Image 1 (cartoon, helix red, strand yellow):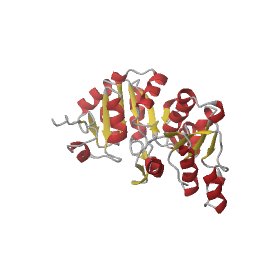
Image 2: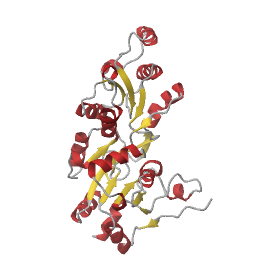
Image 3: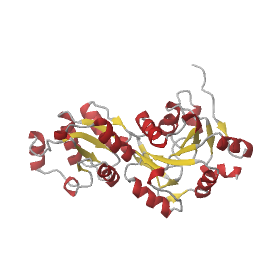
Image 4: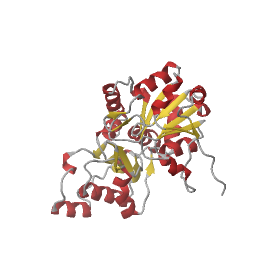
Amino acid sequence: MAAQPQPEYLTGDVAAISAFIDRFDVFLLDCDGVIWSGDHVFEGVVETLELLRSRGKRTVFVTNNSTKSRSDYVKKFAAMGIPSDVEDIFGSAYSSAIYISRILKLPPHQNKVFVIGEAGIEGELKSENVPFIGGTDPNFRRDMTPEDWAGIADGSLLDPEVGCVLTGLDFHINYLKLSHAYQYLRRGAKFLATNVDSTFPTHNSFFPGAGSIGMPLVNSTGQKPVSLGKPSQAMMDAIEGKFHLDRERTCMIGDRLDTDIQFGIQGKLGGTLAVLTGVSHREDWEAKNAVAVPKFYVDKLSDLLKAA
């Protein structure tokens, strides 16, 4: 197999950075590992976004983190000094809600969603008028009781209106939630995931991601969920439909080869830019079995400021 072309390194090359910015109209930006790590915004990011916007570029934040809704993200961006509104944000929780309400179209008698995840998923499901159970409900944030074992097994504690199980990043995952989800899937519920990221970058380290949360269900049922986050092209199609973008004039900026960069490549975008402030590093795309290779890369997003 022929070696894949290696990306162009832009850091420090003012002319190359300027040409890079000029060739695109829309920049899709991942958040965790690109804009921030946890509650720490990377140095120069605010000014970099201002530069892109001052040059007439559209910036859209595309995140797989489903713990926050779009309105929650607007508040987080504001706290970090980044102006934005809900129309600038396209998250996996929103993508999932759109898919369930407008594409999946569950039958009226089985239109509830059993949620493994946080309030971000719930907020977006509410925005699309999708009924749900589970999630942040305290009744599911506890240990199993003898009554649970019996009632889940015979179905008496299951909601007959549940037609879909949606998994996302859940900071309160437990056996009770997994047991409910498992039984719903056994009974024919659709299996969806906000994303299948194995890890979650935050606080300058890594923690189990949404894909790790849902893995027990994959192992126990033998089913794989339909993923509604990067690199799913269902998400790309939804973004294109919402923003009416020209793919050739659009660039995906991210830190993960298996989600962000693959998302842009499979979506046939005009470019992909990797930053080295998150999950993936040079040796990952230089490897013979690299899952994806970006077209460009920089050490950090703020390196683009050299074109100012």
